[in-house]
Every structure is written in structure tokens, then in C-alpha cells.
Amino acid sequence: MKKVIIIGASSGIGKELAKIFASNSYEVGIASRRTDLLNELAAELPTKVHVATIDVSNSHLAIQSLEKLIQDMAEVDVIIISAGTGYLNPSLIWSQEKETIDTNVTGFTAIAGVAMRHFINRKSGHLVGISSIASIKGSNICPSYNASKAFISNYLEGLRKKAVKEKLKISITDIQPGLIDTAMAKGEGLFWVSSSQKAAKQIFKAIQQKKKKAYITKRWAIVAWLLKILPEFIYDNI
Ligand SMILES: NC(=O)c1ccc[n+]([C@@H]2O[C@H](COP(=O)([O-])OP(=O)(O)OC[C@H]3O[C@@H](n4cnc5c(N)ncnc54)[C@H](OP(=O)(O)O)[C@@H]3O)[C@@H](O)[C@H]2O)c1
Image 1 (tube, rainbow, N blue to C red):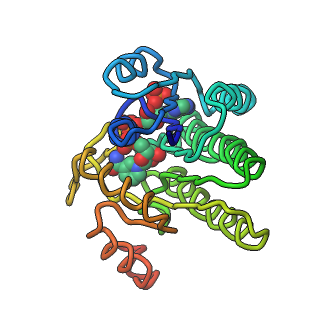
Image 2 (image 1 turned 45 degrees about the vertical axis):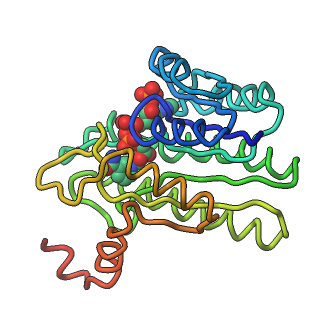
């Protein structure tokens, strides 16, 4: 039986991914801060489930807790980091910027490191990070969120290069969602908003295919392409 750990599985994309992996006979480890929601989810899943309370923004403890979860599951094939946070923060309130960086940058790096060390030891594995289309450009209303997602995508690219150069049998997938109907989809004028179920289906497929990068839903590849070619003087004024 294959095994997966999903960090950030109490709601949204991570929760739907846990359901899909379990229905595909994976043993599942689910982690985040809201243990009550994780236990509710665990009761729904048809395969063996391990629940761990992990706050990735407390990187020291998060490393220990994830190492323990991996030990409890003996070996893990796939580790998905869906945990993330962000605020519309035009006033640049420091506590919100800091929480975003602690979770999406420091926390992400800490747990990606645990995953990589596990995969290096067992000589194979698959690390998946849920970044965002927001990684492509800076934002005036949520600058730390977009910057943190740029960090995640760049970090994953670095880990992929490490795997290739060191001939490690480790796959790295950078998932870049556009807009998904969860608590994280904030702001006005939202468009092309997908359900978390549809998003999770497409993410599961991208993981099975060991894609390096996937835009979710697929049509967001068009927005990604536009953002990449848009001249700075136009982007600054829209
Ligand atoms: N929804 C979108 O439109 C969208 C678009 C692009 C990218 N994304 C990314 O998708 C990922 C999942 O978000 P979602 O849309 O599914 O929203 P969500 O329903 O709010 O899920 C966020 C998940 O992250 C977990 N989390 C947050 N802070 C955490 C922490 N400090 N430690 C551990 N877990 C933490 C939450 O669990 P607890 O609260 O229980 O800890 C929850 O399970 C995020 O990384 C987000 O940036 C979302």
C-alpha cells in the first residue's frame, strides 16, 4: 500500500486531496493545527489514517512532529505541503506579513527539508508544494503572500535541480492554482473560481503523472503566460 502525508489537510484543497488519495487506497497522514477537523476527516476516510497536529509556523516543533508522523507511518511515498496562509494587507500590518512569512516561507522550508531528508534516506519519493499563480508577479494588496509563493516555487525548482544533479529518485511537483473556492480565495472580482473537488482531481492527476509544474485549473496556464509576458509599465498600472 502506498502512503501519503498531506500537511494542511483540515480544509480546502488539502482535505479534498486526502479524500482522493484514500479512495485510491493510499494510507494517509493528515496534519494541520485544527485537530478536531482532522479527526472528523479521518473518520470519513476509507483507509488507515494518521492524524498529527502540526503548526508549520512554529518551525522547530513542526520538524519534530513531521519526523514523528513519518516514523509512525514507517515510510512515506508522497508528501504534499498544502498548508498556507495570506492576507489582503494593503496597510502592511506587520503581524499579518510575519505570519505569512513564518508559515509559507520558514515553515514551508522546514517541512520540505524533513520530506527531502526522508526521501534521500529511502532513496525515492515525491514532494509536492501548493504554490500559486500569485508566485509569478508581485502584488500591491498582498505583497508578502505573492512573494512567499515566489519563494515556494523557486525553492521547489532548486530541490528539483538538486535531485537531478545528485541522481536522486525524487520527483518534485510545483502546483500553481489560480482561484479555488476555499477560505483562501479572498478579494473582489474573482473569476474562473473552481471547486476544491475539481482542483484536487486535477492536482491528483498531475502528481500521478509526476509533472514538474501544473496550473490548476488548466485554463490558468493562459493567465500565467500573460502575466509572464506583460510589460512592467502595463502591470504596474492595472
Ligand atoms: N484557494 C485559492 O484560491 C488558492 C489559490 C492559490 C493557491 N492556494 C494555496 O492552496 C493552499 C491550500 O489553501 P486552500 O485554498 O485549501 O485554503 P484553506 O481551506 O484555508 O486551507 C489552508 C490549509 O492550510 C492549513 N494551515 C494554515 N496555516 C497553517 C499552519 N500554520 N500550520 C499548519 N497548517 C496550516 C490550514 O489548516 P489549519 O487551519 O487547521 O492549521 C488548512 O488546512 C494554500 O497554500 C494556498 O496558498 C489557494
